[in-house]
Image (cartoon, rainbow, N blue to C red; front, side):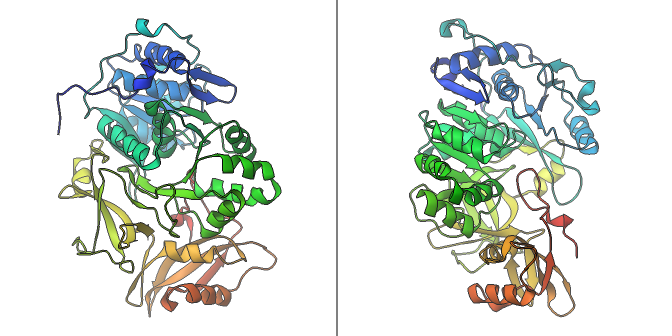
Length: 489
């Protein structure tokens, strides 16, 4: 629903924080005064553009570019520099950007080569605050970002995220995590995705805090950046797994993590083993949260609250969440053993799939967004994700089984380094559970019987795997999620 009431600034600190550090990428940095000057100068070159592509490398130019476009009220289409030619061509033709924001020396692929380039000014000197005229704040329903996300079928769809959605999710996280302008965030996440760009760049800047981006994730970089009085770390399970592996031989890493007030993991489930290893070495509990491109953030474990294994916490302020059965009927009361599909509604939701009204309509059930994620909810409202409806819900012997809970148990087996679970057709059961295992010791891999017994001891017997595949590594995407469609028997 559109509104004509004046909106408060998305980044109020640009005019108030002055010389407070804002962004640091390697040896390059900007304080708030410099960022304001740089972003305002770049914003003036975007006037009249319907949409702009952002060559989302992990650089200062990317951060300045996205702030500039948001100041100008121009929607940004983040582009993954690792995209293949076909995917990139689709994104460019589908979103039709008027130009591309990219560093002057960045080599652009053919699909972006014909677009006019605007190089974000990441070296501007700070101007006196009173001399910088910021553009008028756009309407809350104005599109801020168009983030492309792959579904189960067809080419990626452009998810249109309004300024309202960005503001709502960042303010909800600030309340849930006690996140303030005093916090210094460290991460090495890619900047073409909601996690790294919205939470990891726009989050600190909205609150007047500071970001130290690692360029790319490295355990040594985490140690150095956190040890320099940083307070927060964002990562995905693959990153925390590497941290957990390094901790026994790296007391300085343990000290750096112990000094941070908040460690956050997202995009996939963090294994119990890694949770326990990090807590044992540092005294810190990793907080998990749940979101997706279309909804931004939905739930989070609250810092200081007891960690329930596999839980992604309770709904964030302003977010409503319910579980529905296969016919779309809401469950009357929480039941920690009943699996249902998550539906959510709130100001954090996306506006539409760009140019796809039918897909947009199909994604909603009377205002509730159908996430496609399967979960249980306990009596306190804590959500436990068990998998995706399309790939992780296994119907075996009359039971509905979430792959995620089996994966978590398999990862607790000492002979398992990594694990994924899928279903495959079975003439007797309908589907049987298949375990894809990376052995901790390739010379002594676990047997199917060992893994089945292990699962049956911790879960119901019907959840044990009935087939086993051993792999050198699981296929994962840029955010560390296993690409299960690449797993075939």
